[in-house]
Image 1: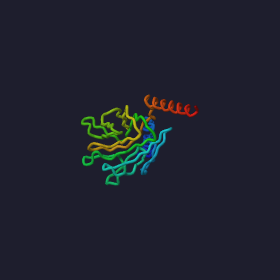
Image 2: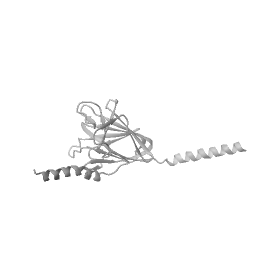
Image 3: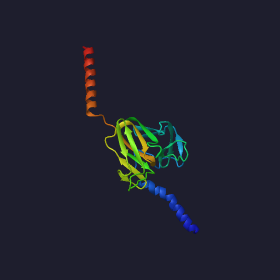
Length: 212
């Protein structure tokens, strides 16, 4: 291969990630192509988007706190085991496996999750799987649900509300990274407004009685 050809292929290799970045949809909390090039680990990284803040913690399958691995392709879990590449993993002997806990500063509507390195098996649906848990709500995130992007796997969610969520790898051979989180601040229900109104009325009546 000539020097000109080598230079051409090198240029394409350098431009490919930028082109891929342009095709990735943005998230409220974007981790894909927003992190460091090389792995950086921390106990509980914090992220901010407008009035929302998000803390992420990592745990092994047995509930022992691990380190969160931040990299250009998302967030993962570092367990210090052999062949640990910093992904959220589960295996035949360890399912359910690693998990990430997402803790928001306020109650939110979780509308979507995005993963990188997610593999789909169109024949047996046996590759990457995970569960999303919030309180008593548990959702299975299977291999063939929602958008099957080339680089990013997206799951669109509805009626998932809370301030803390658990994403856990399940299945026999799961390995992925959290690429993005879509969330909006939850709007109080009408009943909440009604209670607030009654409380204000009560405060007003009490103040009037004191004046009288």
